[in-house]
Amino acid sequence: MADQNFLNEINKRRTFAIISHPDAGKTTVTEKILLFGKAIQTAGTVKGRGSNQHAKSDWMEMEKQRGISITTSVMQFPYGQYLVNLLDTPGHEDFSEDTYRTLTAVDCCLMVIDAAKGVENRTRKLMEVTRLRNTPILTFMNKLDREIRCPMEILDEVEQELKMPCSPITWPIGYGKLFKGVYHLYKDETYLYQKGKGHTIQEVRILKGLNNPELDTLVGDDLATQLREEIELVQGASHPFEHDSFLSGDLTPVFFGTALGNFGIDHMLDGLTAWAPAPLSRQTHLRQVSAEEEKFSGFIFKIQANMDPKHRDRIAFMRIVSGCYEKGMKLHQVRTQKEVTISDALTFMAGDRTQIEKAFAGDIIGLHNHGTIQIGDTFTQGEALKFTGIPHFAPELFRRVRLRDPLKQKQLLKGLVQLSEEGAIQVFRPIANNDLIVGAIGILQFDVVAARLKNEYHVEAVYESVNVATARWIECQDIKKTGRI
Image (tube, rainbow, N blue to C red; front, side, top):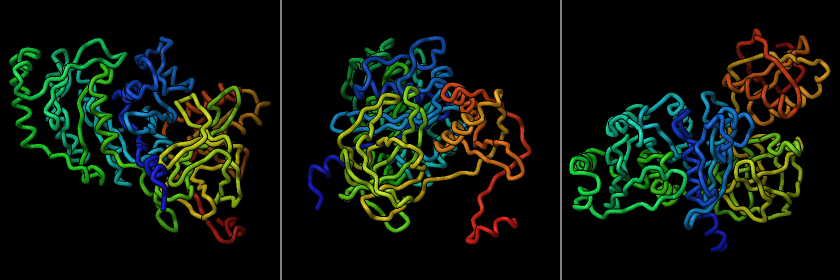
């Protein structure tokens, strides 16, 4: 029987990822969540390309230059009685395997939608992935301080296009220049917005009751009347919030606000921590593993090379599925059937990391990887388990890599092998020649690889088109017979 302290530690964990279309404000939302989690003191506007201020979660050099999230950041911070593990997925136009794999490591997702644009392509694709595992989705309608589309229209679009019933939890009072705040449908409270307070946590004025006469005085008669009419309509026409439907991925609670103005983030975060599931069970090829099992198990969903350029290191990101990690413990690496002692596991705040003494189911920890750990590896305390559902994809785009300096072939090969271990790209060697062919899911991955080869391995490489349209893996019991294909 597991001890109560152990169970309490697991039950207070909340592990989620943020998903959105590029420029919906995902990185700004991440920053403001960290602000409320007291992980940072002030928030700087993301994407000031000429500025020295960059988002805490965008730590790679290319991300700082372009103002986009390319790799997955992992951040842990306390919020109220909970311990939050936040994974910030890539938010660029492209899509990599990294994004898909990250979504296998979380128990819940926060979907950020630009309220001026509604449902966009990347949102649709991400929703398809979350549907595969019935991941609970909580929605934040962002940019209410800008001119947006009618809120009812956006909710209808989410329901029609994403096939996801919406349950509004808060509702906006005006928008754009007339944005005055939000009304909480379940607390019967109005929260008033103050402009120009986006860099810090603002003291919000709260009015109790929808019919409070102060509401008319503070937001104006017209907006107060409009709010009451809209709330009556919303309560009659929208889906009431049901926790079980949310947990099964059949309903999304919706919050409104502005990440840039740092308003509405706390309401959303309160809902997410209260309603999101504690660490969930995971399926292996043999059985389901519960988070509350005392024996340790975990899987590798990501490998990141050169997180610290000074040390040229590689970190393997592990989602702990069950049990508790303790510094110095011995673990069984199922694929290699070897016992390994882990004494220097890390916890993260984007590029910053610290060694940890203990970690529990739901936590994301980093293991130093010297080429012995692969994506999809399972670690246990002896049981020969393999967690399922960690995807591998065939690349859709191909380029031949050519060196500017032929003497750097060794560095090029090392760089490509290490970057391919991260899952960002795949490297192929034709049987007929010595070409190096790189395959990726999205076009931006080629730019990322070229930039990282230059910055991290001091190799200048260019791409050439190549007559390859597809790649497939084949398996055969008799290796000699593969030569006949």
